[in-house]
Image (cartoon, rainbow, N blue to C red):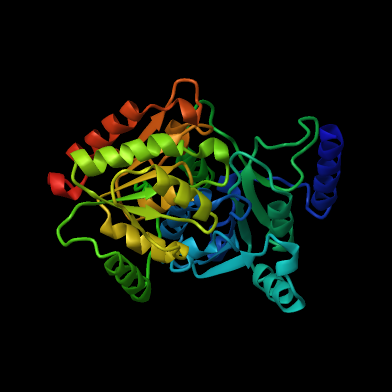
Length: 371
């Protein structure tokens, strides 16, 4: 079955590539004037992946300050770049077929076919058929992408006529995105994410926070316990033990942060706790980001919520299993990962988490004197 799927993908990529010129260029061979209209594509990955790519977007803007820069993002992830100051337009790609209609398809076509001369595809770990198709549809003369994602090593790269060599060795994912645009002379040494909120979103979060009736002056720790992949969910019995310890020993207030599918897990977690906590209502992504500003620390699984906390410069203690935090976590000291030697989420001990929380409180929370 897998071999048949791979064969079909190869066939489709060749078909898409047949509409492209076979001429290839070095990144340094693209004329400067071609960077007046730039399309960046990052629509096939999850929420955290798009936030990880924001320093690369910022680098392109700094290198080409007068260019028109648009980004294609999937509907679910687009809110994190809604107010991005380095983009002129965000073009939404609807992943679900039923979300499209004739008007949306027409607008998408017009936006993508809007005179772009350079298209940058930020693929780093997997190849997306839809991303490559969008790149071809853009009509850009130069399509920039990594050179390591060929489905068939025996064939020529069918889509990216400006291939970027992938640097060897273990590198952070944030650098993998930057490596692609660095080939174009775009660099960035500030690895903070860009997620800019509106005053209205901050006000909405303020109202939610005050509705929890948390005593004034108390240290608040936000805890997000959900994840789409069960293999990324720190066991609730251990999490409850950590929460009870934080309330009893550290004298903090706990705000539980829920996702749209977390109702059942919330009730189960509450049933395991011996101390009172505050359960915040479900909030839209950007309001959740604003709410996190009221927290001294966020405890969370390795999900998009983790990266949202980073975008607001909030220290975190995060639980990791499948993904190596040395590669995927935000590259700042204020983010402390916890991972077991065997890479299994259930193997993380309560003592490991307690040690990480103590370290975070000592070095990175505001009440410790460090920002």
